[in-house]
Every structure is written in C-alpha cells, then in structure tokens.
Image (cartoon, rainbow, N blue to C red; front, side):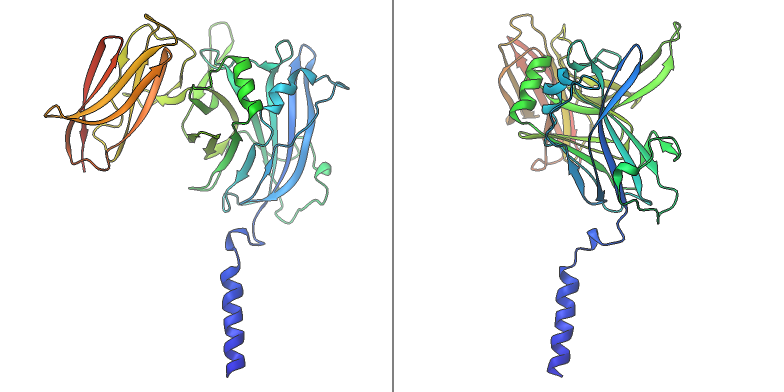
Length: 356
C-alpha cells in the first residue's frame, strides 16, 4: 500500500512539474533573419541568422559583423548593432501549423546608413522589419536543416499573418548603449517616447504613387526604462519611430505617429481619452518652442471640483513637443475632476469624469 502511495506521489510530482505550455505538441517556427537593401538593379538580401524554435519560445538577434562582399552592408553596422540582443517570440497556442518565418531588416538607405523615412510625414525610424510568413502545407513536414527551406513562393505566403485569439508575437529591444547611440545619430532624443506600428498601404495618388501611413491597431507598446517592447496580433511590415500611435477621437481611425517629429505651433491640452473612464485615461498636450525649445517648465495637476489639488502628474522642464501622460484614478471616487496644464505663464484646463 505504501509503495503504491509513493508511486502515485511521484506521478503527481512529475505531472505538476511538467510545463504544459511547452509540450511536444507545440508548433515549430523555422526562422531566418536577413538584412535587405535596394538599388536601381533590384533588392539584395544577406542572411544573418537562422534556426528553429517552438511557439512559446523565441530567438535573440545575434551579434554579427556585416559583410562587404558580395554585397556591401558595412555602412549599416551601427544600425544593426542597435538591434543586437532583441528578443523575438511567439506565444504558445498562437499557431495552428508549423510556419516558416523570415524577418527582413529592410528599408535601408545606402547613402546614409540609416532607414529610409517612411509614412505620411516621413517619420524617422529606429527599426523597420518586413516579416514574411508561410504556413507549411503538411504539419508532419519537419526539415532537419533550416538552410534547406525553400526560398521560392512554393508555399502560400501570408503578408498579414494573424495569430490565434489572445495570442501574440513579441519583440523586446533593449535600450543598450548602442541602441541609444543610434537614436542620437538619427535625431531621436533620449527622452522622446518610442513606438511601433504597422505600415499600412492605403491608396494610389494622382501621380500613381502608392500612399501609406502608420496603423497602430493590433499593437500594444511598452516603452520602458530599459527596453521598448511591442506585442502584435499579426505580423507584416512593422516600423519603430518617435512617438505613440493614436487614433482620431471621432472616427476611431488610426491617424499616425504622434511625436516630436514636428514642433507644435500652439500650446495645447487635449481632452482626456477615454472619458468617462475607470480607472485609467490618457492626457495629451503640446508644448511650443515660443520661449525655448529645450527649457519649458511644465506642470500638469489634477483637482477636485472644490479646487483642492489631488495629484501632480508633471512637474519638470520639458522640450518643445507632443506628450502623453497616463493617469490612474484607482484611488478616486466617482465624480468630476479638473486637470490643469501650466507652462511659461500659460494655463489650460479641462474636465474629466471618473465613473465607477
């Protein structure tokens, strides 16, 4: 009887320690990482890395010395080094089949060694990826050698590959010294907010030029102290640039990257969104350079209807530009509150409603 109890206990311990998220039923991702540049003669890629991982896992963008032959990529070394250490992963349960994933670091400008500006406002980019995915037609097909994977369109390529519901792909780029140095090189200030977005092609203009803009739908951004992260419900063409993705308040349509790419002309305080809210809302405001582009003392305070200060959200010098603040009202009761923005002897106020 004691022996049987011991066996049952061992089985429970083994099952309890087994990580079901990473079981053998996980689909595989056969991946390759390329850099890709274009000139008048066509597109030229070089392979940087390749491998296999299971969903629930990922791969790290490795260190690499870019070649000068047969295609010269040496002018992009600083750009590439800024991405080294980035971790790309796909949630367990995101896939229905094994897939081939090819990540191209592309949109490269040989003259500057940077990314070509993209989007409606020619946004400056710190990252640009074209992610191409093929679903393997036979889930039992499992090549031993990743280099043997076909490069042709033998498989059906999905240019906007959606994952299963509530599952995501994630990319975490550490804010390393080389990453921050590259931001300096391309003119993105270290205190600017950073964001990722899909590059969405929209229409052709009268000159038969394809127009396009950024689309933030389906991407969640975490701009932290030590890293910038995006998690996406699908993959296609993804750019990283200055600012945050926002939507038009009335139509809810994505309208681009809100950031410091243009210096605002007016002192402006926007209506918080959402409103009413519980418990969080976002407050956006703009600081012009009418006094100083680099030294504007800014205060953003929240008051109750009696005029009593509840919280100070901003109390510091800020550069001219566009800003966004997240306000958490978890500790406040339902009701009407006032938020006030003050800078260079100018004051703006708006009302917001906490509804619990």
